[in-house]
Image (cartoon, rainbow, N blue to C red; front, side, top):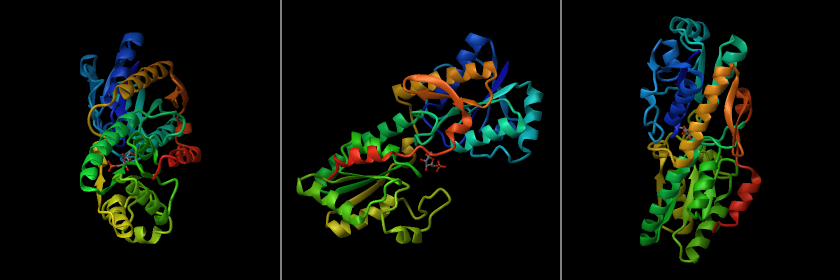
Length: 341
Ligand code: F6P
């Protein structure tokens, strides 16, 4: 069987380890052959593919980014499914493994169910917001980087008796903020799921200061303070829910300084959280997901994706990964609040 592999959407530490897992397992266990598809669906629509051997995936488990490149091209653009069929048949490609997030997997599920294309999915996002899998690879790496950044920012905050507002990724969910904030000992963690008032933020920040601490506030990029929607909206919000005039941390730091009198600084970690090598945990998870995807493709389990359940890699319907966002549950938010202030 000849299998095409593509990575689509925002990149994520662990993508290369997935690619390596797919190719090594597919060649070693099934004698399948592989082609790489460059820059997500774009490569399939524009016939930008190359043969991939064991040599091409050598030494990839710890390498960040994706050797295949990625893009946010929609699969129904530029000829859509018809064009994909043409390119697949020209190269003798029997199936595709699509490694991507919510948009990619939703598109892939549609291509399977409406167009009859042979596609297997692997869920990917640093945000950890996909249902249908317990954790996504990349999340562990992203919050490890955010935690290290909090540790570093704390020492300079303490030297200057300042409050640090640290913005992490998470348009719709606060998983990175929650985990990095807990690991880094934040005095307040702000997430899109749980809007809180400025009075509450002031209480947490001043309580930390009154105990002689330099207050650390970790905020997910999609957080909007309770009652302040209008002021934030005035700053202009783009179609991903992000403020156009800088991040939410740039908005919060001067506000905190104004209401608490504590000198405050904002740091937006941004794409640092997506770059560089995956953690050991992510390398193992990605490799296992890739190997499972190779088996699913060889067995013709179209419309399925490899997923983590507990410590097992299982297969679930791709559509189940995208039917709802996996947000932080109330119980995790209440648990974290005990540590605030
Ligand atoms: O979905 C992953 C993610 O990293 C989000 O956390 C973030 O909002 C977005 O992608 C950034 O996208 P881009 O790289 O296109 O700016």
